[in-house]
Length: 85
Image 1 (cartoon, one colour):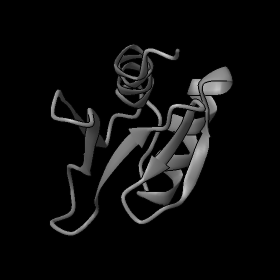
Image 2 (cartoon, helix red, strand yellow):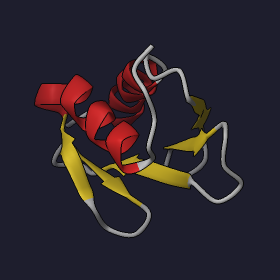
Image 3 (cartoon, helix red, strand yellow):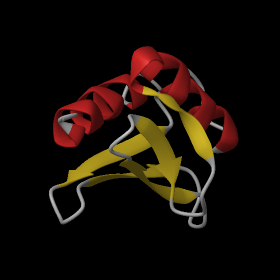
Image 4 (cartoon, helix red, strand yellow):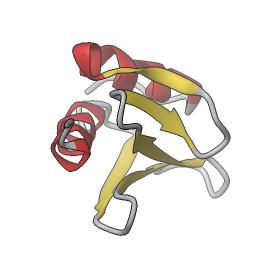
């Protein structure tokens, strides 16, 4: 079985590489990562990881999979108008 919390920790670390984003790992049930653009009051998103290893936003957009965590984080950063560090 996939350790989704560990996968989300990796996703959070990769997302932190984007300087405009603030990232918090939520250890709720289910665990999630809350990401917001530091320069916007409205650009925020919550990402979960499915049992199949897909990173999914709160509105159902599939960002990518655990096989390519950095690409999934970059896709979210692009959607949130963030720059790489």
